[in-house]
Length: 382
Image 1 (tube, rainbow, N blue to C red):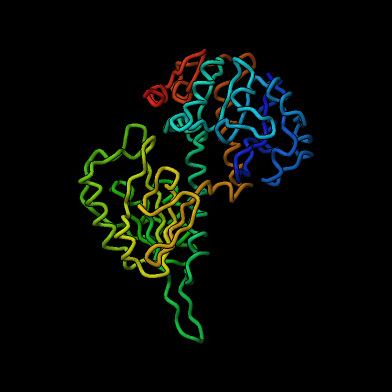
Image 2 (cartoon, one colour; image 1 turned 45 degrees about the vertical axis):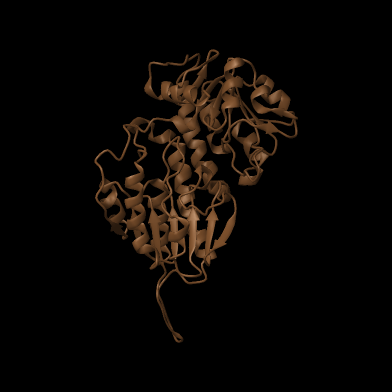
């Protein structure tokens, strides 16, 4: 089959779905790979590198979409300004799309896929099971986001992060609070510790305490319900009463910290408000909040996605698409995730999709003219 890798068209997007060193994985069973010219430029991968790896460089994007039986992307299909058309309409009818789909926020794409019998696999819906770890793009991108969030906080904060002994006196280390100890949170903790900050973390799941403390951070405790996670490994949405207790626990620490990294998200839901406007007002002037949940509404009530706002003397950064700020390694990690999924879906020449397999079934959103994912199906209803 022919596999197409187009250049990403989203504002500020710098990643590429597959890097040159992974092209051989796709061509192993006699497949051909078409790469749009310049697809890897912003991630520092050249057309010549793709050619040397065995891919064909294509200038004509219409040809790439018209010939590819499988298209691999990072971002969900959207309007391609150069072509003046939606990427879902450029795909061949009955072809296969693999990439992030965001079906709950892009229902129009889901409907287009179904109407054109396109089989869509969404990287967000890879199940959190052991054998799917190498395909878990959400975790890969969360790793990058957690790392970059701390660097942004350090750059914005008007203080040093580490303890410094100088002739002008001793500089005390910055205090950093990380809210949420998932993949992004743990990476934020590790990065802040490497920079020399004193780090505390809060997560309502007691089970993560050992991981937090193993990174050298303190763990903030509160009494919590037993069912904090879904069977799929995601955080469960909690009651208003529980969120209020969380806010009280967090609020007690905010006046003592210099930077807060918020990472709490509930899959498919609006992010919980962990820091109210009143709570932010209790922070020290010059403090920083980097909100990684800004695209889901934000963990801070004052967050504005894609913007830095100052309220009560506190800089609140609505972080958006941080993996694109580290395009080389983000692309490297995502490339391995998506090629691992491709190998799983098509393990041999002439393979057919096996919907009895949990990974294949869970990641598939549309197939044969139908919306087969229950969450996506419900998400499009009035």
